[in-house]
Image 1 (cartoon, rainbow, N blue to C red):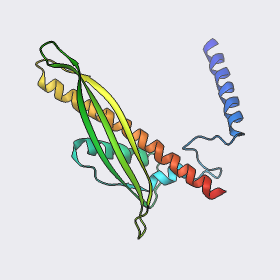
Image 2 (cartoon, one colour):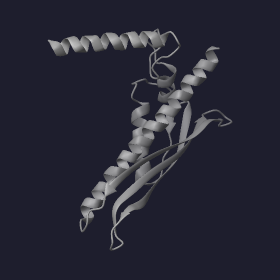
Image 3 (cartoon, rainbow, N blue to C red):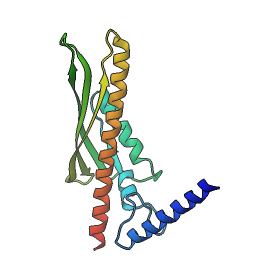
Length: 181
C-alpha cells in the first residue's frame, strides 16, 4: 500500500512539473503533434537514408542509426541522405612494468553531413559525435580479448548513434520552430 501511494504521489509531481514546463514552450523532443501525427523530429528522422559506412565499426554505427530513425514506425519517403565518416581509435592506458598494457581506451569519433535529396544536394547541417569506452586486457586470452573488443566497439557505435540522433532531432525541431514563426 505504501509503495502504491508513493508511486501515485510521484506521478502527480511529474504531471505538475510537466504542466509547468509546458507553459514556457517546453515539450518532449520526440512528441507527436496535437493531431496525433508524428512531430518534426520523428518525421525528419524517418525521412533519412543512412549511407554506407566502411569497416565493421561503420556497419555497427549504420545499423544503430537505422534502428533509431525507424523507431517511430513512420513510413516516410526518403528526403535526406546522411553521410557519416566513423573512426574508432584505441590507446593503451594502464602500462604494466613489463611494458604491456592492462587497459585500453577506445574512442569513437564520427563526422556527419545531412544532405537534402534535391538537385543541388544542399548540405543542411553537419556535426560530430564522440564516445569513449574501455576494456581490460586479458593476459594470454586472445579470443576473449577479441570478443571484448568487438563488444566495446558495438557500445561505442551505439553511443555515437544516440548522439547523432539527438543532434538531428534537435535540428528538425529547430527548423520546424523557425518555419512556424
